Image (cartoon, rainbow, N blue to C red; front, side, top):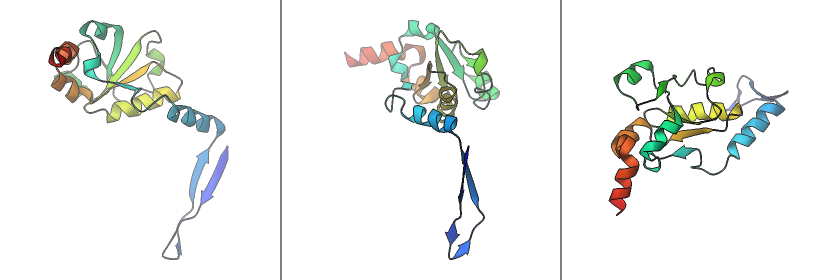
Length: 149
């Protein structure tokens, strides 16, 4: 483990030391995460998922239980975003895990944690629940195909 001490100076006044702790495993995991394919490869749009494919996904709503109780994607399970990493051992290894929140920000954090833990079968629903509803929900793929014709 390497500890780096940085002292910030502002207006000539010394600030308290800031300590950045890094170790080889953490650095390698972060490098691997950020080397992860291309910008959008970890996300998928609702329109890209045919209705029949939803049952092949392990869909996790990472919003809080109250939001999940009000409305959620059919078939989704609720694991609040702060708990996803802690629950990683319970997640399937043989299915794509699709994470969503309201807009994609909390699901992205959850996905990053899982990928850093070596779980590669993770995707983020681009735009989250709001985009899923706007796009037509389970029928978004068929709707988008019809609009393209």
